[in-house]
Length: 613
Image (cartoon, rainbow, N blue to C red):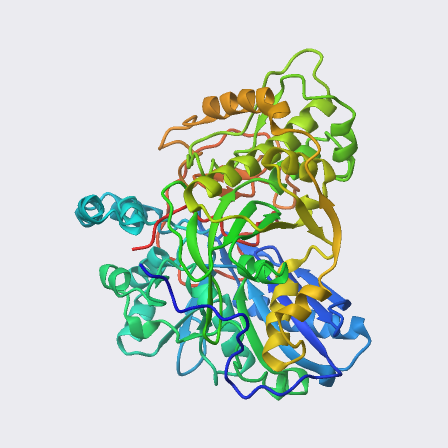
């Protein structure tokens, strides 16, 4: 492949955008799996007002994860109104709106009436697990693998080598949408009559905000669905044909920074331009000003995401990094390669719920109280191990415990494990992608821990820049929106506005951690393949705790917030053995209040590394 069209230094959509605006404010929204946030930004890129609300997930059946679209819409409108009010400004002063969203969560609705056929089906949902297994064991996939191996032998194409390892996953939209078309007759009939709209969260919000006058998605969101070809920059005819998904069902593709229309005046009292739609990790990349090839972003939230800007070339690996479209603005196309590690913030929250500490801010001091963890190792694998191990049946574990082991040792072992996972991802990125790294910037709640950041810097022997404002998904959406309308002139202005809080520089040679990491790797190996393919760990299952009389207490709060099934995290209550439960039949739309549970959710999908056909 010779790559995608050349990337100019700057590029704005040719949409007749107005000149620089010397007054007003831009909204940046992030619609995650657990929280909706809205920030009001001024021209200095400072937050003038904020608001957030928790997103409640529904669990109508075992393995199913949904979001009520009606509730989500009410919350979306509310956080905008509350943020504007908190900023002390009027709605008419908002000159642009940028929306960042969780990836690969989708919905379908009636094109004529606008009524949805079902709830949002989350990227965490496992209803298509049997379908995924069936396809991955099918003759077609085996033929694809063997054909690609043969063609790779002849051509030595890296893309063909990666394609020879291709598998479907439940994280992508592709087979979950195929499941809907197979099991929901109303949706299938509407699709056959071309009266069905499909959309990820961004598409649906755009449709709602414009009251049906605009229907589109952007390239960053499309690239995470499993239905998109990043090499051809279009929906994949091969995948849609294999799965019998009509191309007419998929929305038009638009630039990330683009004139998507205006919010209907009835919603906020004034029309507001919608000028950016973007997926959350790509938005954070843009917010960090990682605009050039070799720029790296390390997001440490509930999970860890390591993204590298690969310029205008999609990069395919067999070890665990997958290609994404970062953003498209006019003729500029920026590609990313992404690797992830689950259970970063999850591990810290779990330790807090075990009363190892009261506040997460205490962990840094606890770790620094010791010279080392005295041989204690922790494997952060509540949701399996992602790249480079890629083992969904690994277990979380402590090893090397002694009578002298204290809370401080346990906490330090947990924090060290997060830095070791960063080291693994970084080494794999360097080995397989081979693009010179220009800078590394960190964001997300866990990056506020100086111990983890400093140890990561030492291990990878690189500087790590932590911004003053760590909510980069909102920042990126606002930046993309501001560029589209001339609120900010260009990327150079955005670079100048970005504020760095601290730069971590290597203070120790990584070899000083070598023995500790070798022991940790041994612990990881012993934790791998712990669960069998048919146990609760690797199949959709959840458990509840009884009240002592064989009844489940509906209002009891979980002491530990995650049970993992396969590569998934589900809320559960502590103190009971886990029993596998079968996936159940089709449900159209679950009652709004049924099966509603609280639980920490990562705002971005833990995508398994899977090559693109």
